[in-house]
Length: 105
Image 1 (spheres, rainbow, N blue to C red):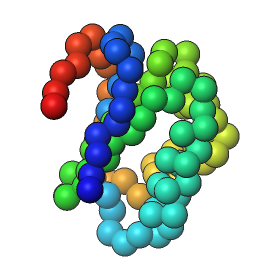
Image 2 (spheres, rainbow, N blue to C red):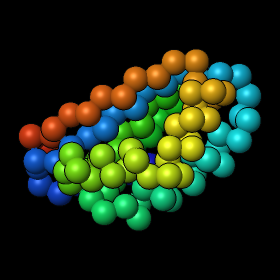
Image 3 (tube, rainbow, N blue to C red):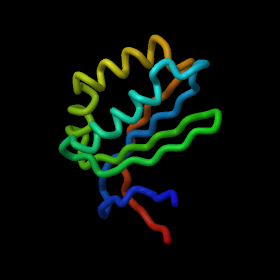
């Protein structure tokens, strides 16, 4: 069963990463799994949700802008970013948003 991230009461932050992949895996799946495992250990990480069918969308949730900044500067994450630019993504966008309200069932 798929589950949504179990986030705290707002406010918190969402990093929305949308991407179009290049052809082939070229080590992408292994690195993606490594990045999720690494992100979960970062201070301020709250959760992650991801979907891919043509357009990929990954939303990671963070307690603060400072936590997001630290994640962006993580050495292993920097290497994944470099490889993404070089071989995994035809295009991508990163958006950072403050979550002020949340509801659902």
